[in-house]
Length: 209
Image (tube, rainbow, N blue to C red; front, side, top):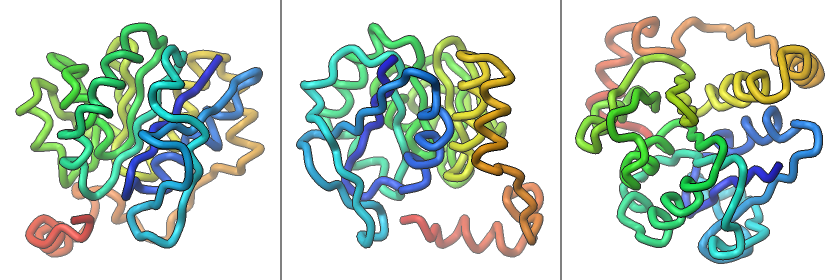
Protein backbone atom coordinates (compact mmCIF):
# COMPACT_ATOMS: atom_id res chain seq x y z
CA UNK A 1 0.00 0.00 0.00
CA UNK A 2 1.43 3.36 -1.03
CA UNK A 3 0.69 6.47 1.02
CA UNK A 4 1.43 9.73 -0.82
CA UNK A 5 1.93 12.82 1.35
CA UNK A 6 1.66 16.05 -0.62
CA UNK A 7 4.21 18.74 0.25
CA UNK A 8 4.10 22.35 -0.92
CA UNK A 9 5.70 25.60 0.13
CA UNK A 10 4.62 26.70 3.62
CA UNK A 11 2.70 23.57 4.61
CA UNK A 12 2.25 22.99 8.35
CA UNK A 13 4.69 20.39 9.65
CA UNK A 14 2.46 18.54 12.11
CA UNK A 15 -0.30 18.24 9.50
CA UNK A 16 2.02 15.91 7.59
CA UNK A 17 4.05 14.37 10.41
CA UNK A 18 1.11 13.50 12.69
CA UNK A 19 -0.53 11.14 10.17
CA UNK A 20 2.89 9.96 8.97
CA UNK A 21 3.76 8.80 12.49
CA UNK A 22 0.44 7.00 12.96
CA UNK A 23 -1.01 5.92 9.62
CA UNK A 24 2.51 5.53 8.26
CA UNK A 25 3.04 2.61 10.65
CA UNK A 26 0.54 0.52 8.72
CA UNK A 27 2.20 -2.87 8.20
CA UNK A 28 3.64 -3.13 4.71
CA UNK A 29 2.93 0.49 3.80
CA UNK A 30 5.26 2.61 1.69
CA UNK A 31 5.16 6.34 2.46
CA UNK A 32 6.30 8.71 -0.26
CA UNK A 33 6.55 12.47 0.12
CA UNK A 34 5.65 14.14 -3.16
CA UNK A 35 5.79 17.70 -4.47
CA UNK A 36 5.93 19.58 -7.76
CA UNK A 37 9.68 19.09 -7.70
CA UNK A 38 11.75 16.62 -5.65
CA UNK A 39 13.87 18.10 -2.88
CA UNK A 40 13.42 19.99 0.39
CA UNK A 41 10.12 21.79 0.95
CA UNK A 42 9.94 24.44 3.68
CA UNK A 43 7.21 24.52 6.33
CA UNK A 44 5.14 27.54 7.26
CA UNK A 45 7.71 29.01 9.65
CA UNK A 46 10.58 28.50 7.21
CA UNK A 47 12.90 26.87 9.74
CA UNK A 48 12.07 23.24 8.93
CA UNK A 49 12.01 21.34 5.65
CA UNK A 50 10.85 17.89 4.64
CA UNK A 51 12.28 16.22 1.57
CA UNK A 52 9.98 15.33 -1.29
CA UNK A 53 11.20 12.02 -2.71
CA UNK A 54 9.29 12.28 -5.97
CA UNK A 55 7.64 14.77 -8.31
CA UNK A 56 3.87 14.73 -8.77
CA UNK A 57 4.05 13.04 -12.15
CA UNK A 58 6.06 10.17 -10.63
CA UNK A 59 3.30 9.19 -8.22
CA UNK A 60 0.19 8.29 -10.18
CA UNK A 61 -1.73 5.59 -8.28
CA UNK A 62 -1.26 5.91 -4.51
CA UNK A 63 -3.67 3.95 -2.34
CA UNK A 64 -3.90 6.76 0.21
CA UNK A 65 -3.53 10.47 -0.52
CA UNK A 66 -2.75 12.82 2.36
CA UNK A 67 -3.03 16.60 1.96
CA UNK A 68 -1.67 18.68 4.85
CA UNK A 69 -2.80 22.24 5.41
CA UNK A 70 -0.96 25.51 5.72
CA UNK A 71 -1.63 29.18 6.51
CA UNK A 72 -2.06 30.16 2.85
CA UNK A 73 -4.19 27.43 1.26
CA UNK A 74 -5.35 29.83 -1.45
CA UNK A 75 -1.94 29.59 -3.15
CA UNK A 76 -2.17 25.86 -3.83
CA UNK A 77 -5.93 26.03 -4.38
CA UNK A 78 -5.11 28.09 -7.47
CA UNK A 79 -2.19 25.90 -8.53
CA UNK A 80 -3.34 23.72 -11.45
CA UNK A 81 -0.41 21.34 -11.01
CA UNK A 82 -1.69 20.46 -7.54
CA UNK A 83 -5.43 20.44 -8.22
CA UNK A 84 -5.04 18.39 -11.40
CA UNK A 85 -2.81 15.89 -9.62
CA UNK A 86 -5.34 15.57 -6.81
CA UNK A 87 -8.14 14.86 -9.26
CA UNK A 88 -6.01 12.33 -11.12
CA UNK A 89 -4.86 10.33 -8.10
CA UNK A 90 -8.28 10.53 -6.46
CA UNK A 91 -9.72 8.64 -9.44
CA UNK A 92 -7.97 5.46 -8.26
CA UNK A 93 -7.21 6.07 -4.57
CA UNK A 94 -8.77 3.94 -1.87
CA UNK A 95 -8.71 6.82 0.60
CA UNK A 96 -8.27 10.56 0.03
CA UNK A 97 -7.51 12.46 3.21
CA UNK A 98 -6.62 15.89 4.53
CA UNK A 99 -5.66 17.74 7.68
CA UNK A 100 -6.47 21.33 8.63
CA UNK A 101 -6.78 23.61 5.56
CA UNK A 102 -5.87 20.66 3.36
CA UNK A 103 -9.60 20.09 2.97
CA UNK A 104 -9.77 23.38 1.08
CA UNK A 105 -7.31 21.99 -1.47
CA UNK A 106 -9.49 18.91 -1.90
CA UNK A 107 -12.56 21.11 -2.19
CA UNK A 108 -10.92 23.40 -4.73
CA UNK A 109 -10.12 20.33 -6.80
CA UNK A 110 -13.83 19.52 -6.82
CA UNK A 111 -13.53 16.41 -4.66
CA UNK A 112 -15.74 17.40 -1.72
CA UNK A 113 -18.83 18.62 -3.54
CA UNK A 114 -21.86 17.60 -1.50
CA UNK A 115 -19.70 16.00 1.19
CA UNK A 116 -19.26 16.72 4.87
CA UNK A 117 -15.78 17.91 5.73
CA UNK A 118 -13.65 19.06 8.63
CA UNK A 119 -10.94 21.70 8.63
CA UNK A 120 -9.31 24.33 10.79
CA UNK A 121 -12.03 26.29 12.58
CA UNK A 122 -10.76 29.63 11.27
CA UNK A 123 -11.27 28.46 7.67
CA UNK A 124 -14.43 26.35 7.86
CA UNK A 125 -16.58 29.12 6.41
CA UNK A 126 -14.67 28.86 3.12
CA UNK A 127 -15.72 25.27 2.41
CA UNK A 128 -19.32 25.95 1.27
CA UNK A 129 -18.19 28.01 -1.72
CA UNK A 130 -16.77 24.76 -3.11
CA UNK A 131 -19.90 22.76 -2.35
CA UNK A 132 -18.66 21.09 0.83
CA UNK A 133 -20.59 20.98 4.10
CA UNK A 134 -18.34 22.14 6.97
CA UNK A 135 -18.53 20.45 10.35
CA UNK A 136 -16.98 21.17 13.71
CA UNK A 137 -16.02 17.52 14.15
CA UNK A 138 -12.41 16.49 14.72
CA UNK A 139 -12.39 13.71 12.11
CA UNK A 140 -15.01 13.21 9.40
CA UNK A 141 -15.50 10.11 7.22
CA UNK A 142 -17.65 10.64 4.13
CA UNK A 143 -17.23 7.74 1.75
CA UNK A 144 -13.54 7.38 0.98
CA UNK A 145 -12.83 10.97 2.03
CA UNK A 146 -11.40 11.51 5.50
CA UNK A 147 -10.87 15.07 6.66
CA UNK A 148 -9.48 16.28 9.97
CA UNK A 149 -9.75 19.55 11.85
CA UNK A 150 -6.74 21.71 12.69
CA UNK A 151 -3.13 20.55 12.92
CA UNK A 152 -3.03 18.15 15.91
CA UNK A 153 -6.18 16.36 14.73
CA UNK A 154 -4.11 14.71 12.02
CA UNK A 155 -2.89 12.27 14.67
CA UNK A 156 -6.48 11.30 15.42
CA UNK A 157 -7.27 11.00 11.73
CA UNK A 158 -4.29 8.73 11.18
CA UNK A 159 -5.29 6.44 14.03
CA UNK A 160 -8.96 6.38 13.00
CA UNK A 161 -8.11 5.43 9.42
CA UNK A 162 -5.53 2.93 10.59
CA UNK A 163 -8.26 1.24 12.62
CA UNK A 164 -10.56 1.11 9.58
CA UNK A 165 -7.85 -0.47 7.42
CA UNK A 166 -5.97 -2.77 9.78
CA UNK A 167 -8.32 -3.19 12.74
CA UNK A 168 -8.64 -1.77 16.22
CA UNK A 169 -5.78 -3.77 17.73
CA UNK A 170 -3.25 -2.45 15.22
CA UNK A 171 -4.43 1.12 15.79
CA UNK A 172 -4.35 0.66 19.55
CA UNK A 173 -0.84 -0.76 19.31
CA UNK A 174 0.35 2.29 17.38
CA UNK A 175 -1.36 4.59 19.87
CA UNK A 176 0.41 2.84 22.73
CA UNK A 177 3.78 2.73 20.98
CA UNK A 178 3.60 6.45 20.27
CA UNK A 179 2.21 7.04 23.80
CA UNK A 180 -0.54 9.20 22.40
CA UNK A 181 -2.33 9.96 25.66
CA UNK A 182 -3.08 13.68 25.48
CA UNK A 183 -3.48 15.49 28.78
CA UNK A 184 -3.19 19.16 27.79
CA UNK A 185 -2.50 21.73 30.50
CA UNK A 186 -5.33 23.92 29.15
CA UNK A 187 -8.82 23.21 27.88
CA UNK A 188 -8.76 25.82 25.12
CA UNK A 189 -8.25 23.66 22.05
CA UNK A 190 -11.49 24.52 20.27
CA UNK A 191 -13.51 27.73 19.80
CA UNK A 192 -16.30 26.17 21.88
CA UNK A 193 -14.00 25.70 24.88
CA UNK A 194 -11.58 28.61 24.64
CA UNK A 195 -12.28 31.98 26.31
CA UNK A 196 -14.63 34.01 24.12
CA UNK A 197 -12.27 36.98 24.05
CA UNK A 198 -9.44 34.84 22.74
CA UNK A 199 -11.62 33.36 20.01
CA UNK A 200 -12.75 36.83 18.97
CA UNK A 201 -9.17 38.13 18.79
CA UNK A 202 -8.06 35.22 16.64
CA UNK A 203 -11.01 35.62 14.30
CA UNK A 204 -10.22 39.33 13.97
CA UNK A 205 -6.49 38.85 13.46
CA UNK A 206 -5.86 35.37 12.11
CA UNK A 207 -2.33 34.44 13.34
CA UNK A 208 -2.01 31.75 10.70
CA UNK A 209 -2.11 34.24 7.86
